[in-house]
View (tube, helix red, strand yellow):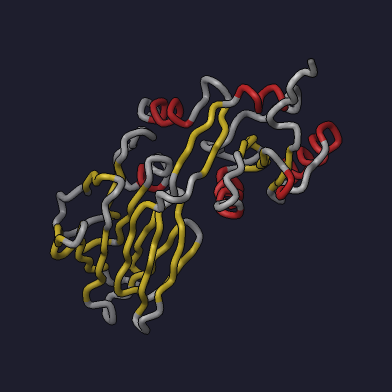
Length: 260
């Protein structure tokens, strides 16, 4: 009886443009080959978190597992770089499934722009004037007026990114929650945001939009001069990220809460 093949025999490598990542791409291709992504069983991303997000977006609808190796700076979403025994590492890796956020941003001309965000959807003031926003959840207005620099909605996977820098809560991956976090709130000054169920539909309306213009960003997709932004989880899209045992995204989320 023949031995079953490794589930990740066909590997596609992608890399950022930094010299360390390009060198890693050359070395790993020489050792393991480099399949076309359309024919691959796994994609290995060589770079930092930015490249990982780009790769997840590029293959958003392909349901192909993605394994990152850090050739960048922070590398929160990446595994440690090692060229040896890659197929064995891939076979032993733990799978984390995440859903992105869906954003529909309508601008002052009535044009609706759609975007998907793995980390967060953010709204920012565009000029020196603070933004004035109202917030509704599932059709019910929850905050009539928030004066702030902006606001964001973060997924559990993105809760340790910009959300954490804005003093938002860290969410375990299985929490079934979204973080709604203000950015530099002025009024109400003591409002620190909310935790919402992950099936919530969030609508943020920009008040005095001509005087206080606001932009909306879904990861890297930006729309300026918005008047309304609708956000909800895209539950029909599954993203599969691979992590070495003991270094899963769950473990990193927990560890991040004990960093100083």
